[in-house]
Image (tube, rainbow, N blue to C red; front, side, top):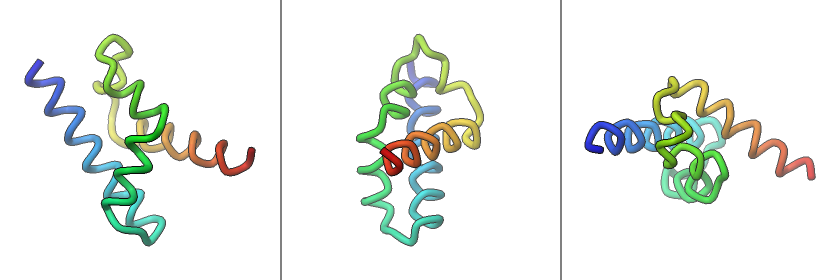
Length: 72
């Protein structure tokens, strides 16, 4: 699953970087937030195929989750 791990790791890095930049927080805080998300749990499950999606799709999914949690 070398390719799987590479795709997941690169998406985590990219999404965390985008989230940190968009929210003016450190990359470490952004990564913690992403690792605690349901989106991340779906991403690391190879059966979902989410790791094959483009970064923008996964990032939007994560943002939807974050925004939903804020409004509840």
